[in-house]
Image (tube, rainbow, N blue to C red; front, side, top):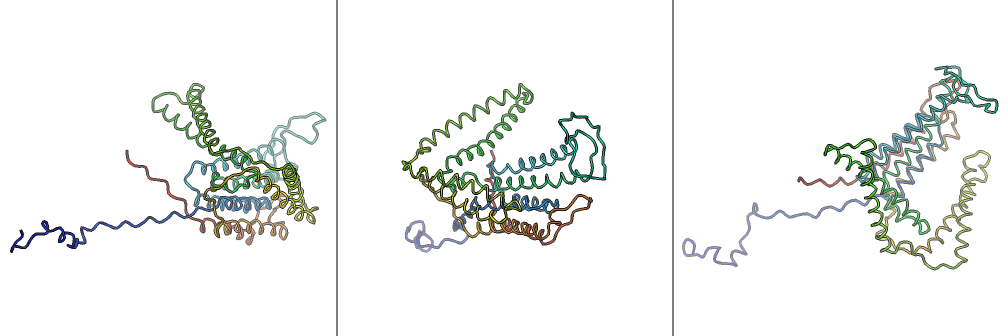
Length: 395
């Protein structure tokens, strides 16, 4: 009983239930976490990167090529996810640098067909037999020859960097969902190769670090043997587990298709690929400008029809297929706009996009092609930011 003979709240359950809870004692309401943004379709990343690579093939201006590389690098830094396969961008950048060094080295040792008057160094020339006319080892190294080799090598280096951007941004496992059924088995092989390589590298770093902590050598032949065998053993175990999982899911089983459909598929696919090759050659050469585009479009249509028919032999279902939304269209359109702008600029102002080296002058940056290249930065602003990696709990 409480004071004055009134029952206390502890003895009356109804009173205890109806009594209001003080604000400071109420439990905090938990709000549902906002859903993670839908990632961009991986095919859009590839189309954007290939369009930038196409733009790189339309010019040898080192300033424009450097701007293309900077645009792709900025998008990769801003939108690269935290995944093992996204670390391949650094390997492509190193490969691009190796292309530059090798091309300049070959020009230095073997000479250049570009005549030049600015001699940088004169190397000892090795006499060659008469049947090797046109080839020389050593001799004069001119600034014009090195500039021509640098401009030409930067075009290939920029193309490699753009392909590396696609590898770092597009999830290979999700890209496999969008492949046609006829290319599904080949796509699985590529995806397995791309995903196994980062695991092998991670195993090597982990085992070398463990050996260093134990005071054991991790370099040389002995260290290689002690590290290589566990890495190969782990790769073999993952391969066996993957094979068992693929067999359990019915991978490799094909449906019965009539012989006429198979023959039609082969004719359409091979004919379409030949048409694509002939059309591409016509587009890239000045003599084939009249027939290049029609043959290319006809070849693409035939190849797509062949792939569609070939996909009937590979019955499979897609779980939660990726959607091609407005962001994918914007990303693809930004890359296509860059490629189209530089293609038009190469026709209207070839001197700006292909600076000469004889006489040797500093290349200039054309304004409107440079502004068009900056359109390639659009994916860094219209696509969702990558999810942050999960925080490690303190041990």
